[in-house]
Length: 216
DNA sequence: AGCCAGGCTACCG
DNA sequence: CGGTAGCATGGC
Image (cartoon, rainbow, N blue to C red; front, side):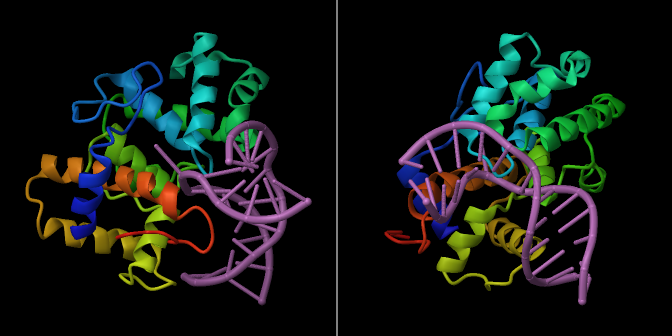
């Protein structure tokens, strides 16, 4: 929580998850406001796997340009057109299939919030994507662990080199829960904390040796 | 030129 | 189980 407070003071609220038509929305936590925005987040989560978000924005804009930024339209796109649209995000063959598979899952939900186990059973959705979808699309208190989180915590001496995703996630959630009470407050803290880690780590944990210049 | 990006699956031992 | 090759484009 010391790290969280320091990052928040320096970088300010990040306002994740950004939407392509509205960008970031710091200090506004009522998003997503409708089913289309929920799906846009899920789509962004899949596209951003091992990819920069700027590349994802290009893909989302490509889809939007052909009026296909919703799950019904994507389902009706020719597969090649979908692959072409998401090409900037890389792994377009895999991701196109992941997206179509996810849409079938999303439709079967009929607006219901999925469980973590259900999400993990969808091909293309691993631990980080499941938690990102739950935290940002469905406002569930699930901390998102990514490569940056592990690098930062390792450099801070708070975790072991071989700590698993599950171990790191539990560590973060336990520490945060000591101080943050209330479900809504927890969700906001998880959302901002992960976003702040990314903002900070882009600057100090992208190049080896990781952590060079980190002032935390 | 080479490394990294807001990972995941399949397959290996 | 843990470990790793393959996936692919774009930016620096």
